[in-house]
Each structure stands twice: as structure tokens, then as C-alpha cells.
Amino acid sequence: MDQRIAAEVPLVDVVVGGHTNTFLWNGPQPDLEPIDGPYPFVVRQKGGKNVPVVQAYAYTKYLGRLNLTFNDDGDLIKYSGQPELLGSSIHQDEDVLQLLEVYRPEINRVNSLVVGQSKVTLEGGDECRKRECNFGNLIADAMVAYIATVSPDTWTSAPIAVVNGGSIRTTIMPGKDGAVTRGEILGAMPFGNSIVTLSLSGEDLVKTLEIGARSNGETSRGEFLQVSGIRVTYDMTKPTLSRVVSVKVRCGKCRIPEYEDVDPTKNYTIVAPSFLAIDGGDSHYILSEHGANKQTADLGDVDLLVWYFERYSPVIPEVQGRIRFSDGSACSAASGMSIPRGLSVMVIALFVVKMSMTT
Image 1 (cartoon, rainbow, N blue to C red):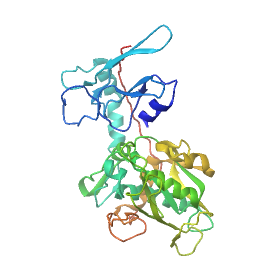
Image 2: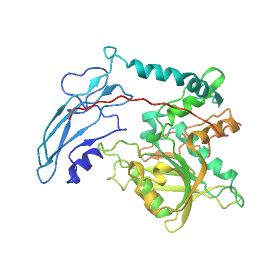
Image 3: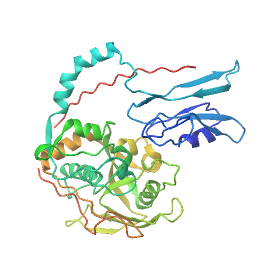
Image 4: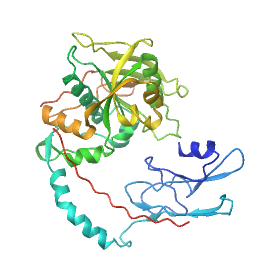
């Protein structure tokens, strides 16, 4: 997406990207990360304008340094740079360290609170960007479960949920006796999304799944969707945006939940994080632009998982074959919601970043 912006937006002079963990570097590999290209990576527009694109990997391991020179007309005429590895040779700021010590005890206390138990590893990170993962199943199921508690007439008003795999940042390895803490949940889901219900046509739901499966080597795969109440099969050998082979969806206005073929003309109520439903993030513009009757729930995604763990622990989320590929890869043929056992959370986080940029 960074390269596309650089190529297609004439007024852009430079693009500083993030979230794809791309590592750009000039020269020999400095550490464990494979080099994805030079720093900066230069995109040439059709009109001949060169636009530098930069990103400094992830986890504040590197500090990006980009030097830019503009002429009197405001045109970029020179650029250079190189990330700096923030190793032991880089001294920490003493004032910042002292400030952190003021807040650290309360942060540690809140983050160390055990909210529930899991009998299995909750797999997040990169795996959730390319296939079904059990942590994605748990998060999507938690969304459906919470909305079901406020649905007065049927078992739920929103039997379907989608979550972008890119939002599930890390795997949670349960501690002693399967303990899961608030800090681990916050580390896995650090973006503070709200939970939104919306109405979407079956046709647009299929298009949304297509966007999630569009990875072609240029996208980050963060758009790949983890699901609840959906059984989808993809053929990744097909062209982008034509990879959905079949979709079945779970009914909500039914006495016994079951799956049926998606109807392109029917409207479905689904649950999604605000990053998708409101912001159209990870290219999911259909959810933000075509979704109707949007309502935001009274808790965020971290609070949602705290509620779910407190209510249903110990959880045992499975990889169940909700997402399949036409070559037969994926997982078991089982289906349904993750099987668990049974509010508010206050998380205090402090991020102090000292950045410098030479221009």
C-alpha cells in the first residue's frame, strides 16, 4: 500500500510506512532480519517524479533516519538515509527512565492481573495473516457471544464476526495453571478498537472475504479475515478478488443455529472491530462504506476478551476448518464456536518515544 500511494498520489513527496514490519537497509544484513530492500525504497511515478518510501521494521528495534533536501519551490531534490540499530551501544535517556519508574508499579500491577485460563496456546502473529488461527477464532467468537447477551428476541442479532488477522499481534502462551493476564491480552491486541455491529449484503460480505484473501506479494496480509459464523473456501491459484469458492453463513433468527449458503441479495448483521467497520482499515473499505445501521458496543476489544475469559474460562479454542483452501489444506472438518468455560478493565499504558529526524 505504501508503494501504491507513492506511485499514484502526485502531491506526495515521501511515504513513511508502518505495521507491515518491512525491513529496509543499505549494506550487509546487521542482525537477524532479512533485508526487504534499500533505505529509502524509491518509487518512480508516471510523470517521472521519484518518491522515497521508508519503514523501520518493528518493535522499536531500529530508529529510522531519513535526510531530505527541498529546493526553494518545495520540490524534493535529494534524499538519503539508513536505520539505526538500537542496540546496547545506544544510551537510554535518564529522564525518560526516571519517568517510567513513576508509572511502572501501577502498570505492572494491572498487567499482571489474571483474567482467566486457557488450556491451549493462543496462536497469533503472522499465522493469523494467512490461515485460520485459534486465537482469531476465540476473538471472533467472543464478539458473537457478547452481542448474544444483548439480543432480546433471537439467540443473537449478529451471528457472524470478522477480525483482521493483522490486529492479532502476538501469541499468548498461558502461564501456570493456564493463566492469562490482562497485560498479555493488551500485548496481543494493542490498538484499542471498539466493537461494531453493522448490516451488510451477502454480495458485499463475499467481496469483503475476497479483499481478505487478495494477498499477492505486495500486500501485508493484515487484511486476511478470521471469522465466526462463516465457512469459506478459497482457491488461491485464482486471480486476486476472484478466489472465494464457497461461503456458508450461520443463521441468527433461528431456534437452532445452522449454516446455509450465503444469499447475495440478503442482508446480514455482522460484528467487526472499529478499525474495519468505521475506518475501513487494511483496505476493507466495503465494511466502512457499505455497512449500514452501525452500532458501537459499550466495551472495547481488550475489555471484550477480559469479559470472555472471566465468563468462560478455561477456554479451549480450536482450529476448526472455518477457513479452507481448495487444495485441501487448512484443518479439521469440525465447525462451530470455540468451546470455553466461564467488567470492565482499566489498562494504563505509557509510551514515551524520543525520535529525531534530520532534514
